Length: 300
Ligand SMILES: Nc1ncnc2c1ncn2[C@@H]1O[C@H](COP(=O)(O)OP(=O)(O)OP(=O)(O)O)[C@@H](O)[C@H]1O
Image 1 (cartoon, rainbow, N blue to C red):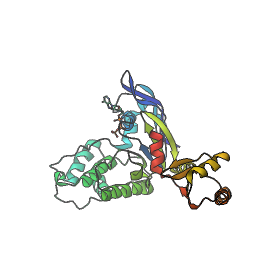
Image 2 (tube, protein in one colour):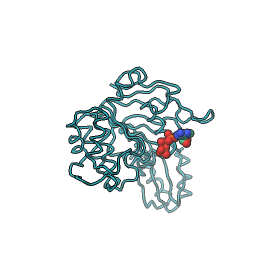
Image 3 (spheres, helix red, strand yellow):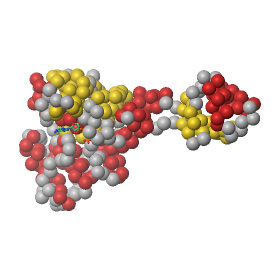
Image 4 (cartoon, helix red, strand yellow):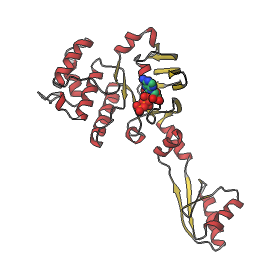
């Protein structure tokens, strides 16, 4: 079941530039969907459209199965979001901030302490938010988003500017929300490494267009397909010639040969043949592209 689905979502800020181009997001119920792309790719614009913060121009948006424009209030009651920097009152404590918003959103008063505990801020006492670290502010902003006990949480780069510890803390919090409360999470980031250990699904956007969408496993299998073999020999030119004679496309990098992934038996035969031509074989290794380089390839 899809919690969020867009069809051909398209948005232009000017007639000549398409910020979001026929985007078909498919966020499955119970998933943690990482929405990835470099700066300016169209992530924030897409998320703002999905939340009705920008007027939709083309395409359709369904949340919880309903068309967004036909059930806007009902949908927004069940969606928590953090887009760009959070609006918090610096002169108030974490609790006081939440009490104000609990009244605005008309949630049960008991929810304030629940969300403070959930985000790990129950003991900040009289400390004003202006004295909070960036990580604490982000946690509080997520607490605000959680007040209405949302079934869908949309977070735009929530770990921006956080140190590695802060990033890990937010990651653990989101995992907990997903596992314990079954909250579906859509989180954007421009760094795959930052969310790789968190997400179940990935959507990669570049210049407004989705380049890849699927499970993290599907992205990993792309990584598998991109394995290469590195061959270090005493005579790279002759080795390359011999490989080309067998229709194996080998290229030279820093005196080593790079060839496509081949079965073990085939590599052993190549080794034998090179030795047979008096070529010393120093190394036959596998080059495993990391997920980050697959991501970079997709958005190049
Ligand atoms: N209010 C606006 N007016 C005009 N152009 C805009 C506006 N907001 C965004 N854009 C343009 O739309 C494109 C997509 O921007 P968007 O902010 O959605 O990207 P992003 O992926 O969220 O990037 P970042 O990671 O830097 O936030 C960019 O070219 C940007 O310059």
